[in-house]
View 1 (cartoon, rainbow, N blue to C red):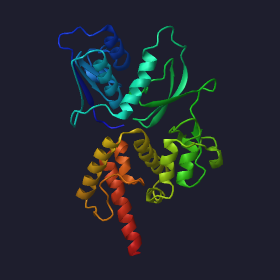
View 2: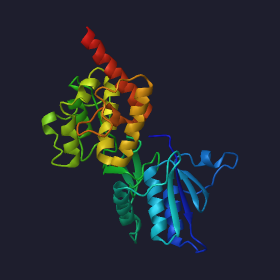
View 3: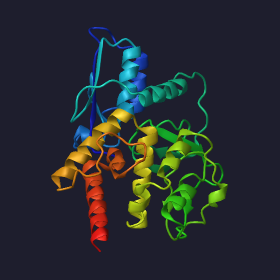
Length: 310
């Protein structure tokens, strides 16, 4: 996940915030309590900091969006959500989808279900966590709300697969879609055999459409030359950015990566500023950062040039 911080600034204009607001804020973002010898940021490193009631600093963009929309719906007269290094912006389509899901859970009355073990996949950390909870609505690491979850039942363990030498895209598909959704499981020598490629079915979903654009793309050719773990991580980053993050943010990070690429001496030949239908290495910028994406593209282009000269 990016090291960028997010700030939600709220003004109630003399109105007493309703109890529901405090319940939501403390449930999702926590409270500033703990060892007073540490700074508030150190005490609240996993989620963020409630500096005052009207200023909340967070690590997760989805959590920032959720608290901003909660405050608006509960009557705050002014709500602003900032990226620490950017301009104020409104909630995206994905933020509103998350808000509806969270509202459906938090607005429920009555007895909560019993805690059980879940595999919670965070689309901001790009990682999966084993976590015991009654309501799997947040990442246990960053507290982000863009998550997928599945119950682990009596097994209570995360998946772990072997790298059997299959080509990199097939291995990625076989290990990432062995369950009901994309899940970035570990791949190493201690895992079990991954499901057969023919047994994987992602249907006619937006995930399936994104996968189809990867097949036969120049991106996969570039990844075949990298260490396999690194190649898998890049496929994860490109896929998650394309499917689960909004186009505006992808474009912003892509342009930053291309600017960095040029500053490193990269040639403009074959470089497209707008996002293309077929993914490329610049798509990794949303989650791996512009500098990393630029370096990857530069290495790939240099490899192509060397191959032509040889």
